[in-house]
Length: 635
Image (cartoon, rainbow, N blue to C red; front, side):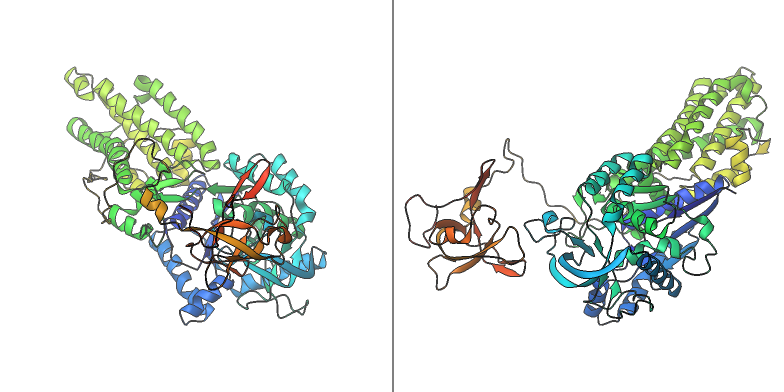
C-alpha cells in the first residue's frame, strides 16, 4: 500500500503555542487529511522538544524542576491540538523513555562508526537558539546571527560529529533531488551555506544536566547530548528506532514541515546524521515563512502575539484554517490582520461558496421539490465539466508541493465556473420557457461542482465540507474521492437538504485590539532624518587613548582605556584589530559616543563607542586635527 509520513517540528517548550506553531501544524494536518482521502497509509507525527539549557533555566526561574516545567508546557500544546482536532497519529515528547533509548542507540552507532569523536569545544554558543556559531558568523564579534542576542564564549570538553565528512554528499543530495527542499528557492540558501565549508559539530555539553545522557557503553556520565541531535532523531524514534521498530516501514519521511528559522538544522545536520546511520533521506523538507501582525513583527513586549485559540474562538476554527492556507504563498512571510481574515470570510467563503450552496438549495426547492438528477449535465454543460476536470487535474501536484495557497486559488476557479453558469444560463428563465431539462442540468451541474469542491476542500475545512456533503446526499471518504474526483463521475439522483447559512457575514472585528497611536504626518524626503534635538541627545567627546590591548580569543576586538576628562578612563571595546595594532593607538585622540548604554562584548564591559570611517581602502578612526583637551565636547 502507498504510504505518506508527515511531521511537524517538535515544538520547543519554552513558551505557549502561537500562530506560527498553529500554521505549521495546520499545514501538516491538511496534508495528512488530503493523503488519507487519496487512500495513502498516512502517519502524522507532532510533539514537543523538552531538553536543553534554555528549558533548565526557564524552569529554575519558575521554581520548578525541568520535567515539571516541560510537562506543563507540553500539555498546553497537546491540549490545543486536540481542541483544534488535529489528526496526528502520535504525539512524541523527547522525555519519553522510548525516545531517549533510540537517541542513545543512534549515538552509539555513529560513535562506533567513527563519526563521533571526543575533543575540546571552544566557540560561541547562543542559549536562545541552542546553537553554536563560528566567530566569522557573529554580529560585531559577539551577537547571534539568528536572534541577535549575546552569545557566550564556551570552552569545554565535547564530543563532535564529523559533519565535514558529509559536505560533498550533502551537496550531491541537493543537486540530485530537485524538490528535496520546498519551496525550491530555499535550496540555494542551504547550498551556499554548505559550500562555505562545514565544521565538525559539537554534539554534547557538560555545563548543564537537562538532556539525554550518553549511552552506558561510552561511560562518560558528565556529558548530555546537544539538544538538536536529540530533537531531530524524534522523527525515527517515534517509529521505533532503537526499539521494536514497529513503525519503521513509514520511513523515510515524505514531508518534514518546518519554519525557515530551523531549515539549516533539517536540511544540513539531519541528512548528515541519517547518512551516518545509513538510513534513507526524507523526500522533502518543506519550509514556510513567518507571520507578522498588522505589518509589525510579533513580540511579547509589543503585546501583539497572535493567540491561535483566541482567533479560532472568535471567528471559527475552520475559517481560521482557510485563512492561514489561502492568505500566504507557502514559503513566504505572512501578515495576520482581522480585516484580512474578515475579507476572506465574507468574500471567498460567504459569497463564493456559501451563497452558491444557498442558491442551489433555493432553486431546487422552488422548481424540483429539492430532487436533483445529473443525467443531462454532460449534454448541456460539457464545456463547464471539461474546464472543471482540467483544473482538478492540476491540483494534486500543488498539494504534493505543499502549495496550498495555489491549491485553494485554483479550487476557487471551479466555484467561479459554477457561479458564472448560474448567471449565464439563468435556470429561472429556462423554467419560464418550459425548458425544465436545461434548468435541471444547470442545478445539477452546480450541485456536482459543489460536491467536488467539498471533497477537495475537506482537508482544509473538514467539518464545513461534511455539512455540504450531507446536504448533497453523499459521504466524504476515500471511496467518494475516487468516484467523484479521480474517476470524475457525477452524483446519483438525490434529494438536497436545507442547511442554515454556513458563513454569516462579519461586519466588524470580533477581537479587541489595542488602539494604535495616530501616525505622525509624513514629510517628503525625511527618511532617516533626525531633528536637532535628536542630535543633541548624543554626547560625543574627544578622548585620548591611554592603553590598548588585544581581547583574548577575538580576531576583531581591542580593549581601549580612553581618557574623557573624568575621574577614571573609560574602557571601550572596539572592533578595529584588523586595522590598528595596540601600540599604534596609545596617545591617539579619538571621538567617542560618551552616553551610550554600557554593554558586554565577549565578557568585557564597553562604556562607549569610538567613531570611525570605513571605505574600500580600509578603516580610519575619527579625531580632531589639532589636539584638544580630553573630554572636549563635539558640537
